[in-house]
Image 1 (cartoon, rainbow, N blue to C red):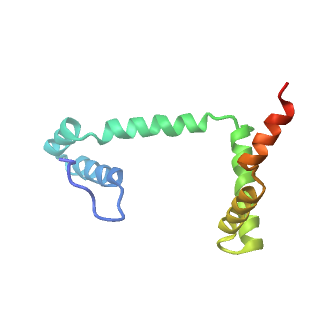
Image 2 (cartoon, rainbow, N blue to C red):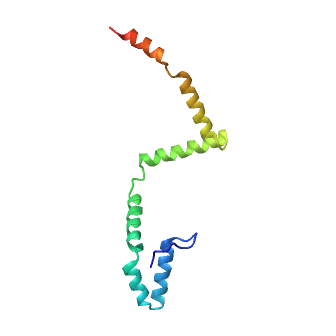
Length: 117
């Protein structure tokens, strides 16, 4: 029990809860025992609940949240200004400019010669 995947669009936890509720409503002790003994959903649900709870404990003034909000706003602005592929266009422009202005090996050699004692 609990080994099959639910139909597309349904969460496994929803199916587990429905089966559990039906077993309770029908006093189906065999199904309740099978759910308790062989299903991993209750353990998985406990772990997921703990994980969600830990995220709820985060500092609402978290710098990480602020940075993510700024990044999301910048991406939205870039998409509004430059279109759907605005981020890719900007990224390409930056890469081209970096390649154009990056020091060449000859420049590094002359720099090293200039600081050599």
